Image 1 (cartoon, rainbow, N blue to C red):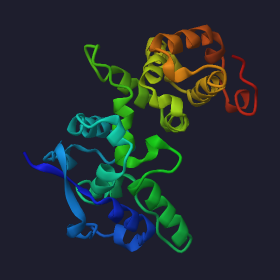
Image 2 (image 1 turned 120 degrees about the vertical axis):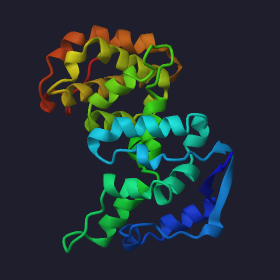
Image 3 (image 1 turned 45 degrees about the vertical axis):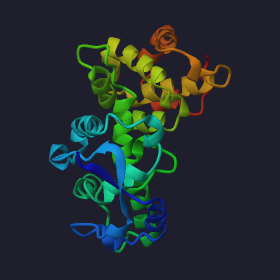
Image 4 (image 1 turned 180 degrees about the vertical axis):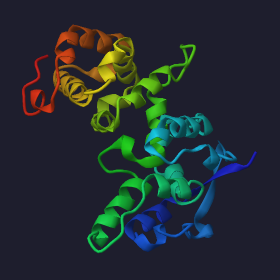
Length: 254
């Protein structure tokens, strides 16, 4: 079994502290091979790049392929940079370049380019789910349910909810609690009409609701049924939300 290559920790810090946008515009990222080590116990998958679809509509397909390739790593390891930074700079560099192209031109500053690269080729500082390759892995890990005939049924619902929902939930530490995510998605799976046109403000309400409840309850200790039941009680409210002005800067009753 060929083991997965990763960058040494110190080299990851070096790359992030010395981002040169021109290096990311080339066909291949030129890294120092002496800074690569093998990850014990993790197989190096073959042909992963060819399974990825570098378009927004292809995120579900890509996320499942990445998760399947690395489904044996632990959540603790997945919170670290080792694997994901290597993949964005080496094995999957071509995918990242196409999926999140770097803007160029006189109206784009060097600082903007560096920030963009930092957020997509490295760990995004605020949004767990926006950390390109690692974020896609997490989105499947938190939504897969092996008790279902189709274990990716809720993953498919999640990706239908759109980027606004993903980013809002990625900001909540609560959503790293898998039971919370499964509970929310079971509710949305039951009421699929909610995630058709006009879901963004509804998703905003759901994220703000649990953020408010989290001020009085330890949500990370609760099971999925709790989250589903809370949303069922709020169904009429969620159904009638049509715009952001009904949610933004307004108190959310719990």
